[in-house]
Length: 106
Image 1 (cartoon, rainbow, N blue to C red):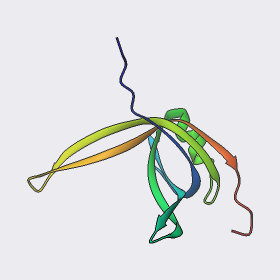
Image 2: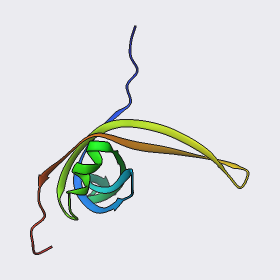
Image 3: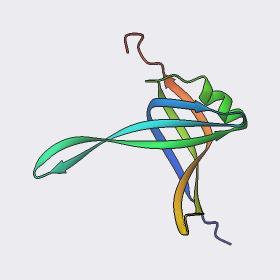
Image 4: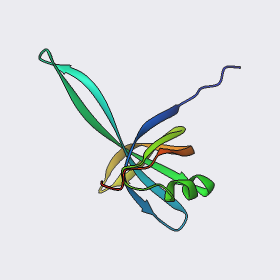
């Protein structure tokens, strides 16, 4: 039987870390080049990654500006707010690695 998979792989720089009691959220920026009106422009996209357990420990050791590699699964969520249904997409990390540390001058 085929298995459906919703996974992600992200390489980028840490913009911030929000460590809670049982979960750590990491904002990771990735840069993409795209052509706009014949000119190439760099676009930065921010991704909020959710880390639990051992992965959260690894993430909490990263610092702002560090280059990281994160893989995991994509989870759809929904909830009610003020009578409206809010939909979201969560990036749940299964693996978190620091590829290189930010230079001390940053």
